[in-house]
Length: 127
Image (cartoon, rainbow, N blue to C red; front, side):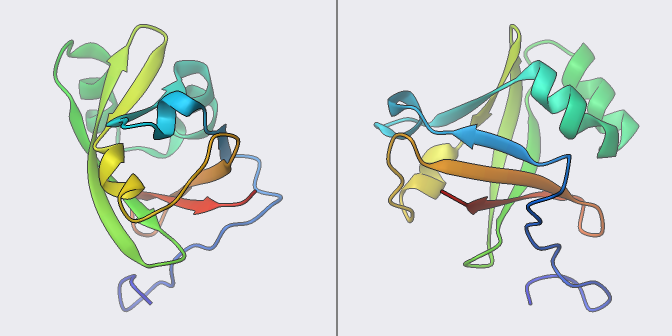
C-alpha cells in the first residue's frame, strides 16, 4: 500500500462514472513529453474534486502551470507532472517520465480517476 495509514489506495472501478478514459495516440507515446486531455472531459470528471484555490489558479492564471500528482496504481509509483491549459485542452508535462518505465503503444487505453483520500490522480492501463 502506497497510501497513508488511514486509507487504502483507491482502486480502478470500471463502473466509476468519473473515470477519464484516454486512448493513446502516436503523439502521446513517440518521444512525447506531454499527454493532452480535453478541457470538457476534465471539467466533467476531475475538476469537481479538486481544491477550489488550485482550480482557480489552473483556470484563471494564464501561463502558470500547476503541479499534479499521478499515481500508477499497479506499480505504486508516484510521478509529479505539471498541468497547463492549452486552448480547449490541458497538457500534462512530464508524461515522458511515465513513458520511460511503461511500454505503451498507440491505441492503448489508460484510465485516470481522482483519489479523494489522497488528493491525486490515479491511473491504470486498461486495454
